[in-house]
Image (cartoon, rainbow, N blue to C red; front, top):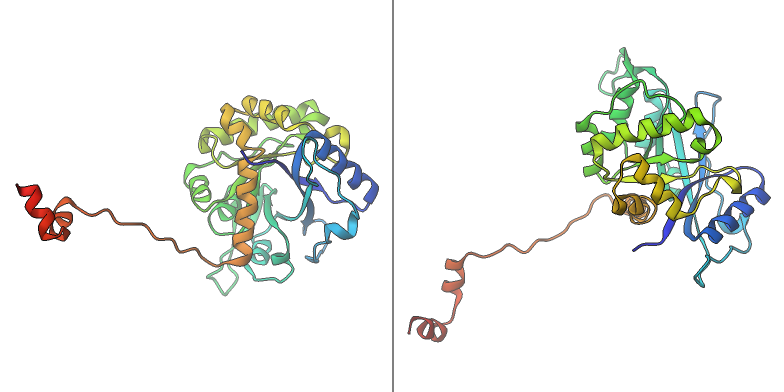
Length: 288
């Protein structure tokens, strides 16, 4: 079984709070964490900057409890999508985007104006949040699709885009820290998670914290029990904080290093073909 991971620790300006988050995560048994840099173009104009090297922020990393290894710190970029033009940034080959270990997209707004990529006249068409969720699942080159857990979703998940995302190796992220802060968010978290499980059948689920304080972090086995409440089986709940996180990290590595993967499969030969390839001496023995 792969080590436990938390792929969403908000990267704030305070280094002391980040250090305390890392120490708490290592004490709880997490071997890998990801510092999340969020960009929301709706609030103000922002640019995608280079990720800060973890060695510059933390001169010495804490040791994971129960092991002799230090915790591994990754970089993550989350783009809050409120307009289709924001998706073009993820489609482009930006040098700064390729420097992040994990790329996530967060479809947030209820309605938007969809600008067709094939229409050079800039024809605008109104569409719902489901349309941009479909774009995130089917076309964007990302590793994670974040599910909103702070409010009721204004749409229902549809099976074809979700299955296409699963086939492409994209994972869906659920956060549990908002459920700790507020009872209303707790209700929305469980409701939205169950709605997703009914479509994806527990496949490609990642559960992260988005904890801003050490008190909001929970141990990996506690999160696995929370996954049971979301509708996951015991093995799927453990995978949501271990093997699925590792698969997300590997998906990000292949996205940065390769444009495609080629694999070979040995073709099974028929019985007739095997008989024709046998030497004459062996054929005589079998016939006798």
